[in-house]
Length: 325
Image 1 (cartoon, helix red, strand yellow):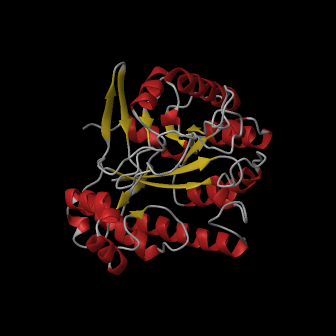
Image 2 (cartoon, helix red, strand yellow):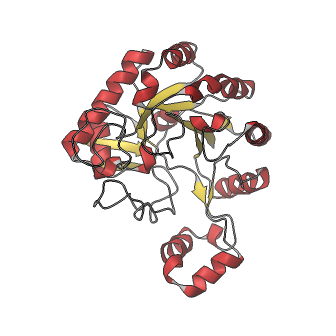
C-alpha cells in the first residue's frame, strides 16, 4: 500500500461563492511542505488557474518540482478557468459554481487545455494528474483528460452522491458515485483509458465495513428509509469516513479507516484537503490559529502512524504509472 496526499490548491475560501479571487493561502504552504519532507512524503498539489497567475506560487511550485519534492497536477474550477460565456454558471467567478461534468464537451475540453497550458507555462512541467472541482467527473471529463494527455484522475468519491448539489441553474447537479468502487480502476472511453484512483472514503462501522455491496445499498437508501435513518442516528452518524483532516475527525477515526483499507488490501490510500485550510480564517474548517495547530497535530499523528505501519508515499502520477490491474 502507498499513501498519496493531494491538496486542492486554489483561491481563498472558495465556499464563499463569487468572492474576489485571492490566493493568500499559498503563502502558508511552505510549513506544510516542510512537515511532509520531515516524514519523507511527496505531496501532489492540484492547482487552479488563479494559482498559476500568482508570482509567489510560480516560484514556490517551480522550486518543488525542480528538486523533486512534489508533483503539480491540475484542479479545474470551471468558474475561474477560461474561456467563459454569458449566462448564469458560465461567467468568470460566477456565484453558481458549475460542475465540470455539466459543461458542453467543447467548452470543457477548451478549459482543460487552457488550464494545462497555464500550469505548464507557470511551473515548467506539463501536468498529468487531475481532480475536478466539486468532484465533477464523468465520461466527458475523462475523454477531455485523455485528449489532453492526462494519466490519472482522482475525483471519484465512493459512497457519496453530489446529485442534489446545484451547479448550473436548472442543470442536473453533480455526479453520483454511490455505486463506484473504492479500488483503482481503468476508466475506458472512446479515445483511450484513464486511471482512476478514488479518494479514500470508507465505512468503518460494523457490518458496513465488511461488505461493499451492503454499504452501497445502505448509503443509497438511507434517506428514503425510516429504519435506515434510525440506524444512522444510532450507529452511523459519522459514516462513511473520509481520509481528510477536518474538524470532528480525530486520529482514532483515521487510524481505524486506515486499518479497514489495509484489511481490504487497497493498493493506495488518498488523503485530500484544500490549500485554504492551511491559513487561519481562510476556510470554513479552520477559522483561527488554534484550529491550524490542531490540523498540524492531526497531520503529524497520521504521518507517524503511516511510518509505523511501513506505508510509504507516492504521488498521483507515480502511483498510476506503476499500477497494474
